[in-house]
Amino acid sequence: MTSSRLAPGAGIVTVPGGRPAVRTAEGEFLHLDTGTADLAALTRHLVGGEAAPDAEVARVAAAFEREGHAVRPAPEEGGPLTGRTVLLLGDARLTGPLARYAVAEGARTRHATPEHVGRLADGEGADASTVVVWCLDEPAPPALWDAADRLPAHGTAWLRCHREGAHLWTEPLAAAPGDVTSAHVRLRRLAATSAHRQLAAYWAGHRTPDNGPHPGEAAAALVAALLTADLLAWAAPGPGSGLPARRRLRRVDLRDLTVTEHPVLPVPPVAPLPARGSGPA
Image (cartoon, rainbow, N blue to C red; front, side):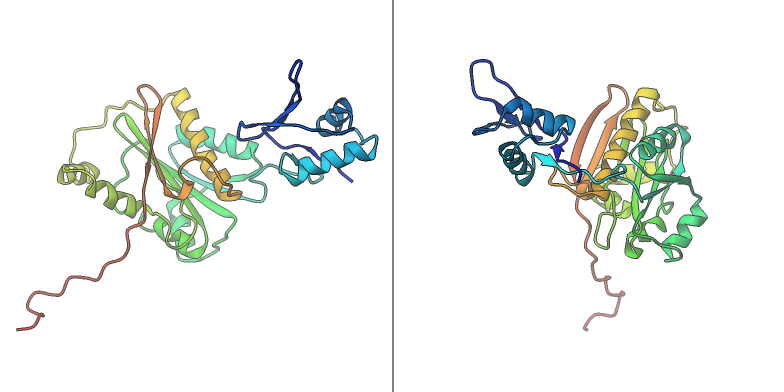
């Protein structure tokens, strides 16, 4: 049987002249009372996998596991994205590092086409273990992502990013009906600015030619890491310490690589306006 190990981020701290402590994965320090268990033997057991030499060490190790400070890894366990397929579209300077990071976490990656996404959006070959990630080094033209917005309705997850001038936006991951789509993000952003006409015209292409800045190697790595974090949250949801991936809009400033997060909610459907002349007399 596989012995338990310290959970990722957790550790045992020996305090000179004081009692030992447990540093939790959240960064808290808890006093550690080992009773009659030998601390060195406990450490070897939880760190190196050495067999527990006696019942007391086994008892304390079981308490670590019960409180979530130790885990019992499954044999031949893969990464968090094992069994997941990531379909990539868009600019290679962004999808390239993302593919490497996703593979490192256990995912299978494949390049897809808009036609393939359209078939998935119609429910053809839809799979809950698949996510479509579309990255653009330019503003997303209107209607480009309309078909992809239907992916969550068929169980396929949907993640995207695009650049507007010096700002690169990563939009919330959508994995189920009711999640935030690209259309929702557009509506929310238009509603949040007094320059909604200008922003809509900018998206529609009524602007001077794009002059960058394009994401460099460091910026592309940062964006890929942020998107990978969203994929990890999709594959193995956890408590987290900030906005959930499905409600988080990020803006990356490519000039200084600062990241700001904004909460965003889906836009509920509304009844259509009545046709002119159809109301009561």
